[in-house]
Structure formats: structure tokens, C-alpha cells
Amino acid sequence: AQSVAQPEDQVNVAEGNPLTVKCTYSVSGNPYLFWYVQYPNRGLQFLLKYITGDNLVKGSYGFEAEFNKSQTSFHLKKPSALVSDSALYFCAVRAPTGANNLFFGTGTRLTVIP
Amino acid sequence: EAQVTQNPRYLITVTGKKLTVTCSQNMNHEYMSWYRQDPGLGLRQIYYSMNVEVTDKGDVPEGYKVSRKEKRNFPLILESPSPNQTSLYFCASRSEAGGHNEQFFGPGTRLTVL
Image 1: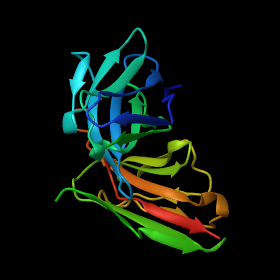
Image 2 (image 1 turned 90 degrees about the vertical axis):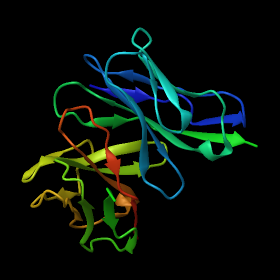
Image 3 (image 1 turned 135 degrees about the vertical axis):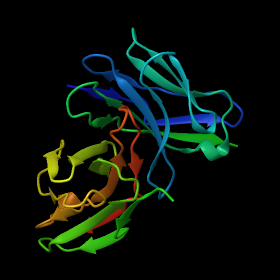
Image 4 (image 1 turned 60 degrees about the horizontal axis):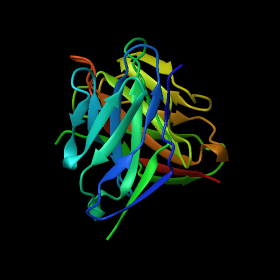
């Protein structure tokens, strides 16, 4: 069975500092990994994905994520946080075979402090 | 504009009164899915559809029904709503062409069952 863990419910970071939102996963085979962001009163928006190839993937709004197979992690990062990055972030995993459904983590609320 | 729309956006109802939440996408996507979002639980999949007339249960299907008579529409039906179905609901769609594609989400429907 596949699962995703986001160990931090809340992450606070000062504006201009680097940010990291953690995600670990469990899935049979090579995973497809995604990050989504949810702003208040909005649906989820796609940020980036890892399918294969380079372990460092770049996405929207200056975000990037590093796939680490040995640690089964896919942490979201940004070199310099903006107040407008404050939102709820979801990591999701999709198995390479089967019904190909996305399985989401419980979400991490990021607050960037001015 | 490519989008997923949901109606209504907000709904307050009473136990046992049948309701339908509509979902429509204009991107000709094959895959559509319904999720519910609850605090501390993230997004959990209710039902999904791989194409017209092809639907299947997700992780939390009890108390819900769906249909996929047309490619663009995927309504969620609550035959006899109960208070434990009070939640934020999201519809999503995805192209299956080429594989590994991200999902597009609707704006959400906040349902309260009294």
C-alpha cells in the first residue's frame, strides 16, 4: 500500500530565509511524486512533479524539490521565502502501476513571517 | 480558460436530504476524481473515473455515488447525507495521454450537513 507522511503540521520561516517542507513516502516500485499548494478558499494548484531523471526538479514560483530514493523523501524547498508563499502544501504519491490514483499527505501549513 | 468547475461552492443541508454536487471540466480529460478534505486528514479519495461509464471506489466511498455519462461531467451524489459528511469537497481531472500528468482541481464545495 502506498502512503505519504508530512511530519510537520506547521512550518514557520522568516521572509527571505530558505524554506523546507518535508515529505516521505512509501510505495512499491518507482514512485511518481507531486507537490500541490492550496491558498485560502482556493483549490489545489500543481507546483512540481518527479517522474524520472534528475533528482532535483524545479517548479512554479521558484520552488524545487529533491528526490532521494535511499531516504524515500521528496522535500520541497525554496531559497528565499516570500510572505505570499504562506499556504497549505500537500505532497502526493502515485504508484507506477495499478489504478494510478494519487495518495496525499495530511498537509503542512507554511507561514512566512515578514 | 482551462478549468474544473464545481457547483455549488457552499451548501448547508439537513440529514437525509438528497443532494448533488456537480463537476465539469473543459479539457477533454479522461480521468476524473472526487476528494474530501478534513483537518488533519489531508485529501482522501472518494470515487474516481478512468473514462465515460467507468467508475470505481476510492478510499472513502461509503455514503456517496457518482456517475460518468459524459466525458466532461462527474457529479457526486449524496443519497442520504449525514453530519459526518460535513467536509470540503474537491473535484479533479487529469489527462491520461502520455502518462504521469498532474491533476487539475476545482475550487471546492464546502458542505455542512445539520
